Image (cartoon, rainbow, N blue to C red):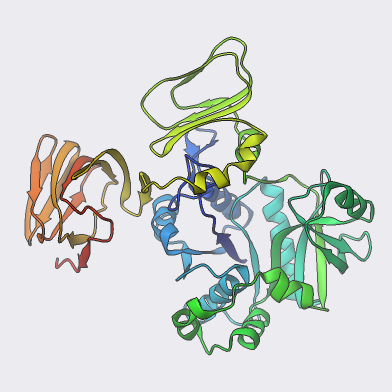
Length: 438
């Protein structure tokens, strides 16, 4: 099975655990059998492998998410990188062009496309395998999966099938309705439109060429920013006469808000938190090394991270985005391909950061024009390279780099470092990368 996972999101609806770099699918909030926590993207990737060990997985995403994907899934997962956001139709066409021109997938092979972040069980991925087979048979140009609705939701569009069969032709698409209209659709046998598609690769490439007039992957990538912003539903699904939908009746939840996310948590508290007397339906996620105490709260979510603190009624938490839009704050934490960082303190002319490098990884070899840096190793062993000179480092060592100096640090074991940046103009844009000669 070739499967494309659409990984987008602005990281605002689950603030303060998410930000512009770490969207909701990268938050480690789901407990595994061994007691460790995993993120939505890790959970979905593991479930795909269980349903089809030979599946070819490609994640279509923005540049800002690539490091987090490598951090959580490793270097082997396929990634189709969008130069900028242009909605789902251009993203899917770009991923299909990448599959054909970079990975060599034949145009007559079927591909499944779905979001990266639904909360589902293994039966969902077994159903995706069947959807792929239906698309490969070629009885329709486009095959959809429709979710049997559990309530009249106003958040989803609806697919109205022509009959009650497991696989049916599509009678109509309906936009997101009000609750009353949604109930009327459901009475007609309507299914939630979960944005899950399957098709032969050449079909979408042809649709892409018709609308975007590109020749190959490189051509599309180079002109991607000028492409029309349009969804796959509008550009393709709602225009296609040869269309079929497959029913899915298993668990399917959109983890788009704090309210729905806490429903999937197996325990009320993650991190250092205590629920006192009188607490009912309270969930706490605390990423800081400070205790959180809740007393007498009901139907509340509490979330604490370097980005800020959220205390909200669960129902009201769905309306968080406009308030987060008002916040003007730099990114305070991020997962990187080599590890992670967390900002500890910001002053007018300094910034202090805690860095964790995974064993066998290193930062880019780089320099800065307008700031000096000081590294203090607090645990682990590794090596630094400063202007071409390599030296071993361990806990207690201090390394100073002046502006203009080329430098990197390599972790032989897990390496924890406190980095102090000093300068009048500290900016993420003040960075030059270089090839490191081995």
